[in-house]
Amino acid sequence: MLEVCADNATAFEELMGRYQNRVVSLMTHLVGHRDMAEDLAQEVFMRVYRARGRYVPGAKFSTWLYTIAHNVASNALRGLSRRREVNLVSRESGEFKGNPMDAAALAASGLMPTRQLDKAELQDVVKIAIAALNERQRMAVLLNKFEHLSYEEIAEVMQLSPSAVKSLLTRARSNLRDVLDPYLQQGAKVEGNGEAAALKERTTDEHQ
Image (cartoon, rainbow, N blue to C red; front, side, top):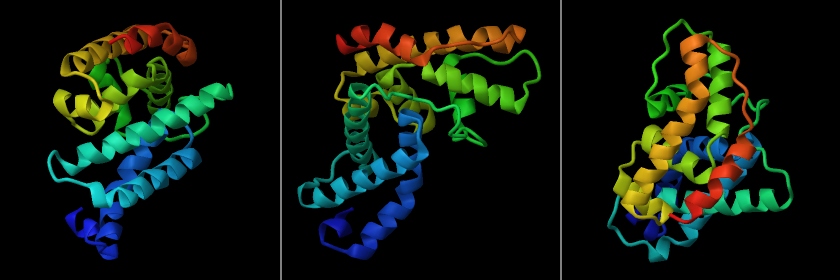
């Protein structure tokens, strides 16, 4: 990033090569549409480049990058909500195929399956579980379990206190268990409405 600050175009290409797939994946889990996620990732890197003159080495570069990504995703989701087109996790996107997010959702919930799981079934139930989380819970889980950021780093990204991040993750784990437990333990059919659950919890999160 210091080379990018010095207007080294090759360094910027290297930076994008290292992080672009991770940012696209993060955006896909947040907005549910691969095409939109790719556009948002491009916006993230455009902001990184435009802000290169203001970059000050301090925390890890990835923390700074995910702070920008969080802001871009939040703006996009607010726009979708205003147009009543919110579809946080698309059933048709197929973005969970072969994706470590399955394991991340299970790890975040603290549950382990008691039976052999069909891969397609697991993908479907993970989609429903992730959709049951509101935007802030989803972001916290993704950064903690998928990008392995600490509570302090997530707090910096989301502009929250570490205790608020801990609270978010606690509620996210509870919500994931509510959706995943009947399926993983008894094989019961899982039904969920991600938007309804997100609306139910949004007020609580916004007052943290």
